[in-house]
Image (cartoon, rainbow, N blue to C red):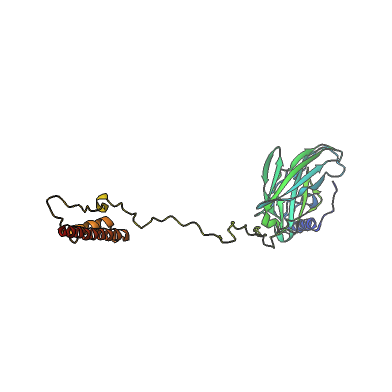
Length: 324
């Protein structure tokens, strides 16, 4: 993994630590002339943070140089809804020729104007399938320090150990971050001068908002074909509906009404003179012909003429007999 020089963010952290050291020295808080070996790794903590690697170890071990601390990014920021996560790996390596009992690493986060702080950002250590939240505190400048000795391990000569970290912050905060700088400091058996490289991670680009309206739902471009209707009028009229015939059928004339009147005189009597039809006869005639029918009128007239003719004939024959 490539080792980078300290970025301005890490340099500002070191400068803040140096300023704190000078203040302590001026006030007589520092009792040792070898301040570089006595200064706390976590600045502006008023001695509240004690790291295992800050404690000196006596013995015959001879180290050539100091262990190294390297910072690397596992992947770029991952936004998952309202939360954004950065994954970082801290690597400790010992190539000094002798073993160390305690090598402790302290990660540090820096963002412009302190956009990420202890109130909105957490740092967790992921190991053995578990996630452990690490305590953090603000440094002398707008930086976030891991204030814990959890990232500590014994290192034999030639040994390397890794610490995987998750840095979690709201997506709304990550969208305001231009660059997230991550570095690390540390101590090994009393040597508090360990300094790691600095890496820069980009913030999260805000999701683009739609600038155009969604296309309207497709509408049919043609109208449905109309239902077939006749285009011409019928040339012939429909057959008329049979209507009942209102004229009354001719009523059969009874034989008694049409039989000729006998002209032979009845023995011992004289023929009775012809007389006009009586009201009963007229009523029978009306009943026979029906109400106002032309056929009934004609038949009644014919019957009257026959009766009159028979009376005249009867009268002529009677005179003829008297003449004889």
